[in-house]
Length: 220
Image (tube, rainbow, N blue to C red; front, side, top):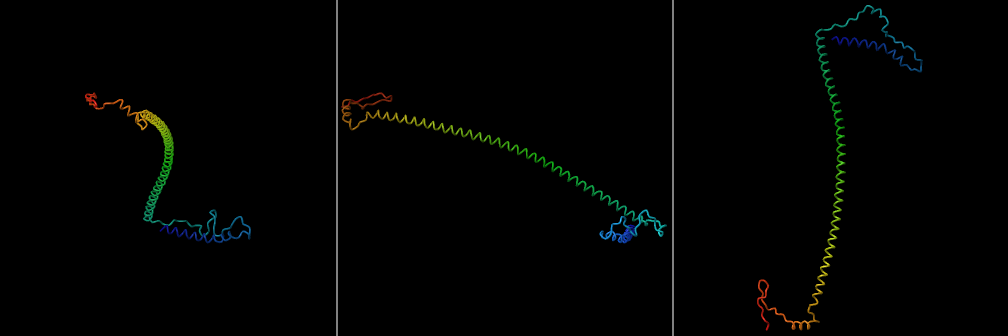
């Protein structure tokens, strides 16, 4: 009730003051090109705080409107609850802001730590790749050398085998040539017949298990 009265009284004062200010504002907003700007702009209907009061209001005492104790108690309780709710909301918002700041700081720190860990892992990965590459190149070089050695050894073995084979064939050829001297050919057939007749050989005999001749028959 007292709030409504204060609002009406203040609104009336604002309406009166606004009506008194309209002529002054209209004069202030006049075009500057028509007349020079005065040093002091007069304002009718408005007095300064140092001016004496009007004669009609010389004995007037400003008395505040009466306040109902029950209404004051209710309003005070509501204001107290309002202040408590507002304080709780401020504390909650403050905690939320602090929590967000802490989370951002933690995310930033964790991001930096994750980036550092990633860089360390990438460096370790590059070093490991370099080590494996050098090891693989060494293994390939060693395998290439072993392959060349095997090829060379195979060529040497093949050359040795071919040489042995040729020597064996040469020996066989020489042996065949030596044996060919005793072969019976149409040219020496008569000579061999006469030689056999002149030197007879008795192959009609028996031998024991030890290879000794135990029985021989005389050809007739």
